[in-house]
Image 1 (spheres, rainbow, N blue to C red):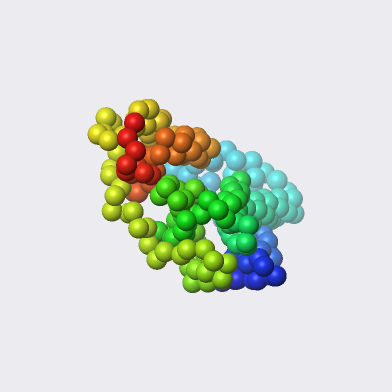
Image 2: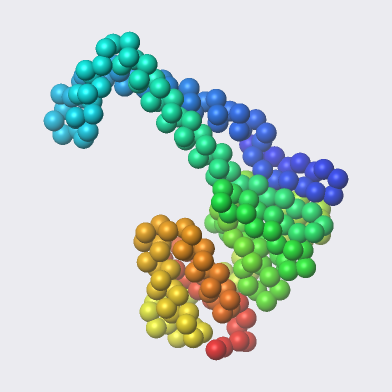
Length: 235
């Protein structure tokens, strides 16, 4: 379960402290168990002509029985450790204090100064920090406790919204859409290609370039939706 911890003038909303050791314990054990199970079914799998990687299973079965057992367990253990590292890396930590809000998940690490923040909300498992011109200063996938986040933000004087106040203004992007600033259409086309390739770094970079020309973009069901940060501005 998520937890909220206040130390001095700082509040951290994150997964419970026991989550990380549990992940590093349970997943490697499960992986090792599956690796052991692999040694029991490997011969049966080689009898399935449709099953992929038949050559690898045949090589595996040529190993001496003790080596085969150790190899299976080691392989499963390695996969379990890899998954544990990935899960740990994907855990979100939100730090709130008098100076600003910091969001950290994996390679995403962004600090937003207090003076830039107008309000914060969570919409469809997406945490969004809004600026004073209705622009999105940051967004990140959110899987923690909303009530704990709301309490942390209010405790430090930040505005908390129950939903996206501008959600109804988003329009589905189609090439050549009316109302887009100059250059936005090309950026959205490039971002569509980046989304098809699941290129997270390009998606982030293109989102920032769109923000620079006052275009807010949101993904829904593998489609792009947009609105202007400041509807009074047209370029």
